[in-house]
Image 1: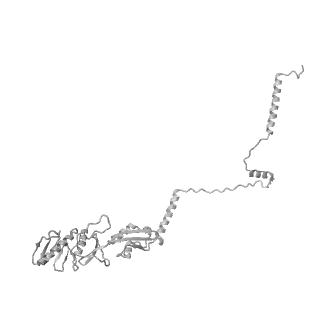
Image 2: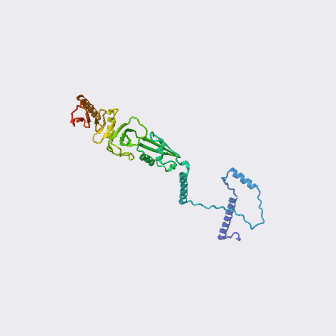
Image 3: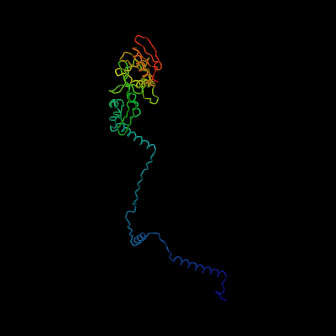
Amino acid sequence: MSDKQELTRSEIARQRRASRAVKELAQTSKRALKPVAVVSRATPRAVINRKRAANQRRFNIALGMPEIHLHKPRITLQRVHASWRLASVFIAILFSVAIYLALTLSYFHVPSATVFGNNRLSREEIEAVLGVLGQSIFTVQPDEVAARLRMNYPELLSAHVDVYLPNHVYVTVVERQPVIAWQQGEGYTWIDATGVAFRPRGLVAGLVPVTGLTVPPVGTPSLDDPFSPPPFMQKELVDAVLALAPAVPADSIMIFDPSFGLGWTDNRGWKSFFGTSAHDMPLKVRVYQSLVDSLNKRGIIPSFISVMYPDAPFYRAVKVELQELPVDSGQ
């Protein structure tokens, strides 16, 4: 046999490996040359721009300054770290300026006060006590101003103060209505229905004139109104004066005696007294008229008549000392 026919097993294995390697190399070359489909997500406009850029020719120009490099400038801003301390200082300065302007600007100063409800008390007298003229509207205390007004003028039953920007002050007052003109010695005063005395102002019709031989019993201060002055007389005495006033003769004036109460001097020459109780004053007046009629029928001229106690009236005659008579009160 020839050398070609006689091959060993090792040679046969080498040939097989060589032929296998050739086949694999051929397959790899085919795969590399095979076109691959690529899906592009670019927009049509981007594709057009790329084609235009591909068609354009690029020119590289070599400058003769190889050592010069252009750097992009960097601009850095320093961060400002705000703090509560800085903010509080700014707020304090702002408030200080606002307070200064509020206290100094004439725009906020009160030029005058508008008063409502006053009749006998003039606006000038009220403004003199308010103390707000020329004052900044921000410093006016309404409650304090109203209290000052009540304490200076007892004839005011109530006072209310309202403050409005920029410089308006409104005062609403209610004056006491006098019912009694009380005269004692050289002086006289007005008294309202609660017994509070105050300065007379002008003329008021319908007042009951009373001449006091002494100071009347003082009334109880009001617990509901701390700014109301203490009553000059008891309210019960005021009610008694008003109840007895229609029975006083036209030519007589009511008097107050600390021992016998209210009464008057009759023009026929005697004094009549009715006490200080108001609830039975109409009964006392009827008893008095019955007693006077009885004395006139008997021709007795009294010098003193007292019906302080309507169930036991008595009189004092001109020539007789004292007699007590039971008189029918008409009940």
